[in-house]
Image (cartoon, rainbow, N blue to C red; front, side):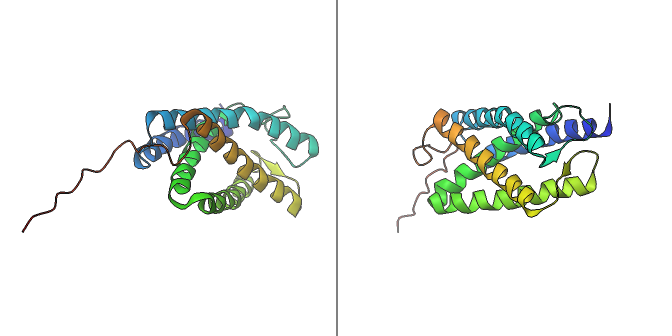
Length: 178
């Protein structure tokens, strides 16, 4: 097994644990968590097409694989990662509405692009980006668009944000009568 493959397997395990922890702390119901996972699967499926398009357009490529899409072990990493992000986005939207959702998508687009370029600098045998600001903007658009897809699928499965009850409800406090 090559080093990039080992890294992808380790990342898959880490993101799975992170997704479970986020599901617990966001108090997602089973239906919401299932919707997030299905959204992550949708991102993985659409992501293959995005990778093929990016390779064809010359925006980025994966030197250690001979296909126009990314390494097959990358897509199991994408599922829990985008499921976790969808759950975080659900809570932000529940609390702050569409403005919070917009800010969250922008933050993920920026941080995701920085992450991708950091990985390219750290492991150039894993991914190579074409030079120019256009490639970075395409990558940021992919992050925001794929996260929006994950959240849309989660909404289709689990329903609207505001109508979802939280799984663990705090116990009502009793007031002391004087």
